[in-house]
Every structure is written in structure tokens, then in C-alpha cells.
Length: 268
Image 1 (cartoon, helix red, strand yellow):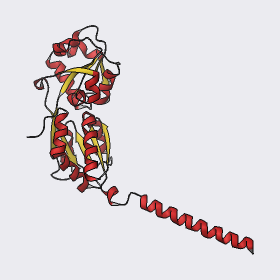
Image 2 (image 1 turned 45 degrees about the horizontal axis):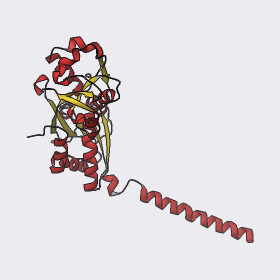
Image 3 (image 1 turned 90 degrees about the vertical axis):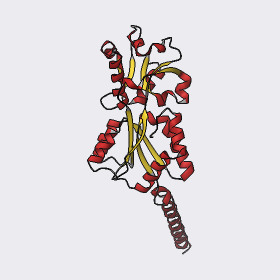
Image 4 (image 1 turned 180 degrees about the vertical axis):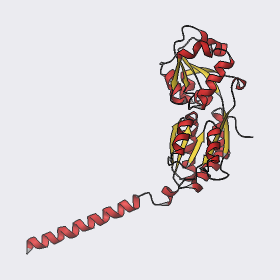
């Protein structure tokens, strides 16, 4: 009889433990308002440093959570066409979100031209290249590897090629180009010493880490088509209202100040 009572006590004790664990799981599960306000953003990698700062400020101000994924605009465009679960898409080429608008894949009226980007010729501080010569310096035979983003799917890569063609150095240096999957990877190639020099986004060159590690020459905006960048809320978004709030934050004083500090020309 004593053994039976012991078994019964163990049964009830186990049952209460299971119930307590279930309550904890329910309370911690992403069903509350904080999770409902969470958004997933696909952003061009030129936004790497600016957006990490901006997202941190947004989360601190609103209490909402943001999952930020950085990459090439063209790759994100293809993924979104195939149903990738993003709420917001920030492209380095406004042409991609415009195509999504035409395809009916966006929230009507949400397209926003958030910035115009710039490109620079960048080299590490250990390099003795005279960047004041501009892209002409790329002709020097001692330069073996030049990093740019892949022009097939990265707008900054296309701008780099256009600038080299404008200054009539592309044919001479094209066999020395090393293509990064996106502009952040191209910057990493130079910063790590894997490449001698490269063409990267001004927004990356102005980030504290790269600013301390190298120097740059700003490529004239007339050397390539404008890097008009655009954002859009995706129709498949599970949190369109939270996505709209983030977009409004970008347009507000804090968002504009951060974007301006990273070298972006702002709308209007």
C-alpha cells in the first residue's frame, strides 16, 4: 500500500511538472504582440553598417524585433519571386522592386526610393597606391587583383564596370577582376589583403572599421548610371503594419540622419 501511495505521489508530481513546462512553453512561444510585430527584412549589402545601426535604434525605440538578412539585390529579387518569406525588401537598384510592383507582389503604394548610392575606389592603409589618380591607377601592372561585386546580380558591380568603361580602363583590367557575391564580400576581399584594390560602396568605406583600415577616392557620379535604391513592402508579408512602421522610421529624423552619415543621398 505504501508503494502504491508513493507511485501516486510520483504520478501527480510528474503531471504538475509537465503542466508547468507547458505553461512556460506557451508563455515563451512567439504568439504575443512582440512576435506579431517582428519583421524580416531582405536588404542590399551596401546597407550592412547603416542598417545594423538603424535596426538597433528602431528596436530600442519601438520594442519590435527585426530579422535582417543582407545580400545581393538580384539574388533577393529571384528569391522573392519564388516565395521567400520576407516582409520588406530594400534593393540597391530600384528597378527590382518596380518589377515586383508590376508583378503584383507588393503592397500597393508602398514603393519608396529611399536613397541614391555612391561608389569609391578603396585600398588598405598598407598600400602605397596613389588613389588621387582615380581609376587610372588600375592600369599599374603591380595590381594583380581588383575586387568588385558581381555585376550579374549586384547593382554596385554594374556601376563599377560602367565607371571603368567610362574611364576607358575596363578592357585593360577585366582579367584581373575578382567578383564578390555582393558588395560587402568585395570589400572583405580588399580589407583582408586578398585583393590589392577594389571598387566598393561609399557607405561601406565610411563605416568605422573600413575607415580605420584604408582610404578611398570617390568616383564621380557622372561615371555611371545613378544607383537609385528602393524599398517595398511585400504582399506576402505576415506583418504589413509593422513593416510599414519600419519604413516610416527610415523616413523619420533618426533614419535619415543615419543614412546621411553613411554617405547616401536622400530623397528630396
